[in-house]
Image 1 (cartoon, rainbow, N blue to C red):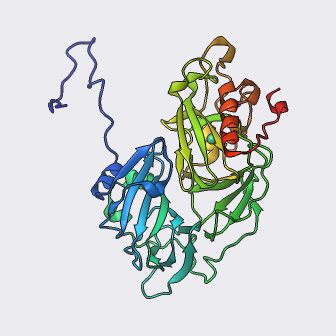
Image 2 (cartoon, helix red, strand yellow):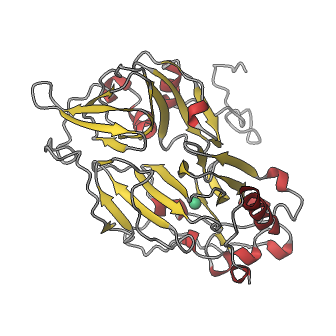
Image 3 (cartoon, rainbow, N blue to C red):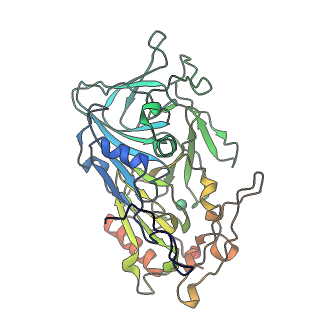
Length: 416
Ligand SMILES: [Fe+2]
């Protein structure tokens, strides 16, 4: 819509300055994406990234598409790139973090700082997860005659939105020595499990995992009994991620928090329900089940757990014979910040209404934080206990399992 470019001062005390209603402007990162002239896929998720249309990507070489799932817009970037058979992508460096998951194919990556010093080369294959150190040069090379497909996660949106000048972001000479030391074993897989320094969860400090589809995962048990999980800490990144596996025949409780987390299906198949907390905890029973969003996925599909800014309940269901393995990508968003400043007031009929049960945790350094998402609503958390959830959830899950010939392991006692 056309706007008058001349300043309009309010005529009297009863009129307010400004338009009142306006369109959200494009961010520098959104403008950058458009300038790449490749598709930008937007949605709550995608069943299989392999099915997304790609277009030639001049700057990078190969073919690509951006994937900007709802809720991640300002937080982190994602794209899919196809490396032609026997080909390579253009070399690049950038002052944002970048991790790659290999969807299909086999090849090598070269990483270096200075043309006159050594290059470090490592191999990858389907299921490899690796990280490029901040601002290091890198070049991705396809080792076979068929094409390779890589899914990348980046911290490009916050960086480009603050700096707003791609010439700086792609041409900065600074070497981040604390992140990249050029040691020969820099890309050797380190499978040692340590407690992560903040929450004490299982962590591996490694710049590559050769096969996240099959690597072993230590027992975690937090989301449901039998859940296995690891947090890879890669190339000194702020980009947070985990790899998690759920047992067959069980699903986890729904919980709510802010946006950032995207789940990427690595093995098995399943679906996610996600709905705003304003719909309450039993939307199907209350006749508003049509407003709940559902994303089905198989390898390699994706879903934004809490789209539209968040405070959305979400619940994930594996319905395959093999366990559902996922990797969760958050960008540079600490997982505990997803429940900071969160004060849920769950609407709905009186029986299913929670009002202000969640005390907002704030941002004071050193304040003790608890994992809200693992605590039931009545105890001040954001999880819906099985016995209070919408009965449709269990019925549908067990029907889906029956179709696959799998027995439910949702014990009756969980619902008491
Ligand atoms: Fe979540």
